[in-house]
Length: 521
Image (cartoon, rainbow, N blue to C red):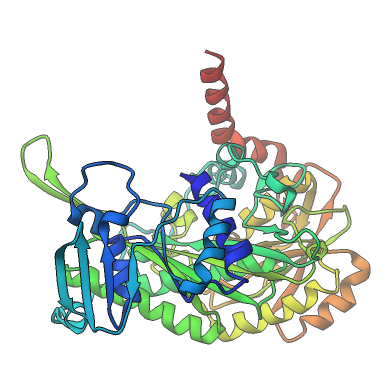
């Protein structure tokens, strides 16, 4: 119920919190009241379940105690402050009830209509269950289907087919189902540029009287987990931060959230994968100094059943980790969108491209490459992100896109579609490292998903200032924006951007038309 959730959020965040009306607050998630009160009541508590507001009658006491009904919070409120708190809740049309007290009895007591249904020592409640000892078995995987030879498709054909891949194509049909104008706080929305391209981050202005904004982004690279869940997690963190940085977020004012979606972790190999992903979260959060302030997990995403022959089968969801960022942009007017702005602007790449096609979108499309999944070189990344945050305040960056799935060429194409302009680039100028096979070097530069890279455009008169700022970071001017509808690569490949735009939007336009037809019917 988003309406109830919004009313509760407004009552807490906009009023009760800043008046210091409560000492503790916990969301009622898994386990309902049993978890929220159990976690908060370190020294003891007494709860009367008959005073709990119910959505359904005739619930049994144990059902009330463990129900996971949504949009509920448990708070510890001093008695002297409750009248003010209650008044605020009524003002926002939020239901509230006193269901018990926290105390120092060292007992967890729960009753229903004066009948005691639980009376437990608080120490036993918190520490009585023995710790479970789990076993891990090292896991490794080599993708045997990869090849080291090129297929015969022309580059323009490859690009048109790549732009239609589900992880790359436009998702505008989803974004347009939501109203991004509520209360007028949107600064940078999910769709950017005249060409309407999916952005990698958004900026909102929660306090209209302030120039400061809130930046949100995310990172997800599940396919890398087919080879290494450690590097999958590291890439998710770097991608989320990179998307946040590119739009103008302050690297020094940034926090992370995690969302683990995993399969049966009682399986020793799956648990080993989970352990490695968590290890990466710990290590990179420390290196970047970006704390995890919240998160969630969904474990045991497995199906056990039978196939059409009656044989037992077990299908497990692939290990996945979504990382979200939230942080501050000091001045919303400095926010940077991905769409290129003017003919004649210079195209720069920040960061190094490695031979890392492992489980990339291009490898899944063509089979080309090896098992080198992208790795995060945190020392370089941290230096780049700090310099970029400083550069944002100079207003010399015209457009920027964090290079993600599909690599350099897909990021560039999205920026060109967004700005409805063309470009000419020279791949030999791209900073690279350890790309040994000259036969596939062009493909690696085009499609490698190496981390910690940002593609930017600047006006020519800002060239010296820009290069001075980034003099200690690998960077290169690899091309120029043109007033055309073509992308010219190495003076060899001439790619029609209108065709690429059609490919990029094909799936989304089909969905939008289907919705329109259904509504008309």
